[in-house]
Image (cartoon, rainbow, N blue to C red; front, side, top):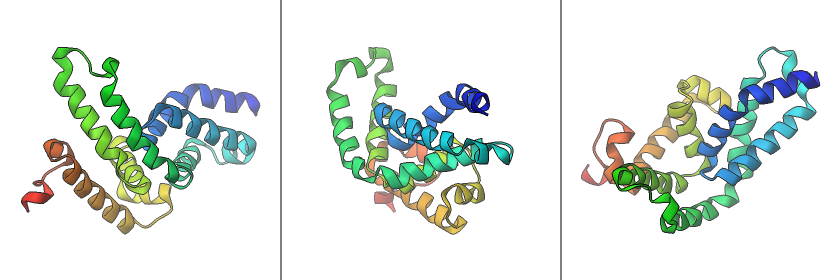
Length: 176
């Protein structure tokens, strides 16, 4: 069974790390989140793998831990994004200025969302899950997913109106 866990980690850790980064907005926090999640999964690996594919369970644990365990770090993430704007190595080449600027604006706006809103957006738009699948992953109702998605997109439009084209149809909230 240990070999199965190690194989799972080798095969899926890159994708899980990407998701953890999207949930936290910080590479170091994402590494900590993933490591903590995998350590907890390792303790229960026999039960987790008994039902077949362990990935849905691992992802659900990752989402839940991101929402529940990292709430106090949201303020710190906002400070980290301010520092990132001042670091020259993140400014990019002149040809990439618009792309880098858009990414930084989006990163700043995402950092200001609640953890639940951020998790809903990651699951819906990065993981491409349905509302029902997202609700199952987060242990909530599909209506909660719908309202959290709506509130998160509205908040992103307020925080970064220049990126409204990324958030689907509609006009910025201020124009309504």
